[in-house]
Image 1: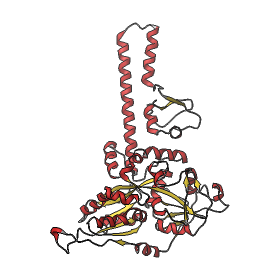
Image 2 (image 1 turned 180 degrees about the vertical axis):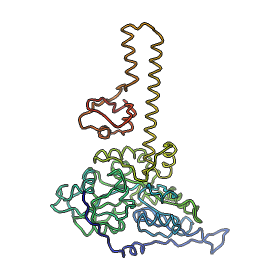
Image 3 (image 1 turned 90 degrees about the vertical axis):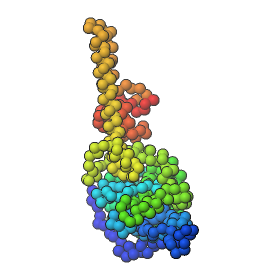
Image 4 (image 1 turned 135 degrees about the vertical axis):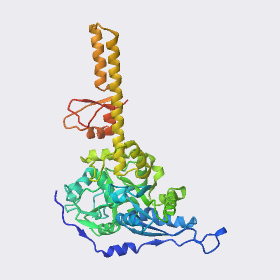
Length: 446
């Protein structure tokens, strides 16, 4: 696969983005503290422009109205925010992705605060209104290069992306479509952040790129494309019918002179008062998306099966020695990070192995009991013994079953029957993802 050269916009955009910073004036405390004392220390937030627009701009104002200190909002991109918090030049960062395998992020805490839709956008004059997940995958991969291949005009698709490999929108989208956030894509037009990307597509009728629902809704120059026929809206994100959704995170560092105040701002964002602010921007408060969190792993598996990809371990990945503890900790801190999802898969695999071992042990005990009850085995006993032995080595086909066909994989079967690969392995006592044509599998426990 070949990729065209990268073109970056002028660095002057950096100053343009930072010039949009919003500073909430410090309120003075009343009652016992007396006039002239600030209600709290000033905080600095820096990060993804999508999180700034969808969450932090208005949250900083609500924080001030609630009697707290000021928050200076410096929207730019994900990498700048993470570096600033890590180096202590900012107190809070924001990103449209969870923690990655980057060792530089080891000391940072990612707290999810909202659910947003990852949306594919094009110019409002483009006649194409919908794409499939497979088409989006193939466009980014360089297999589809002309709008006529997806029902549009006979003209090239100008694919746009954010240049930084750590960008939250790009990282989250590529993890969903390719199984890894650092997947290279065929995007020759690259920008500093999603704001400049949206401006570029607004001027290009052939343009295509990714941003978030909260960052683009209401923009008449841009069209949000349906995915598999489902339009991105707050309602379709909330019920999970729109497949490309992601949490938005606030990121803090546990050490530092204003760590407690930064955490208080995060807690305020996840409070009922913060939820009111979040809903105004077509976002779903994170606590209201428990269903989205519970179905996240199966959703990712279905997407990868549909596009013909698989999850790929990142280069910095290390074996998960205690998947249960790792998943519990990750679910609380960064529930959709690759490390957390890997821990969840390892935990499911371990539980499946434990269940298989218990079943094997029970089968051996049953065989030992049959053998000890009679020294002379008649033909009927032979048949009963054979049935017991078969039950110990093969799953009982209770519930709905499926016969593996030529070309089937465990992932494709899971996708076809709306279940997870881990469930298929557990129900069928499989020790790997390998299946053979003609093999019978339980695809539903009922």
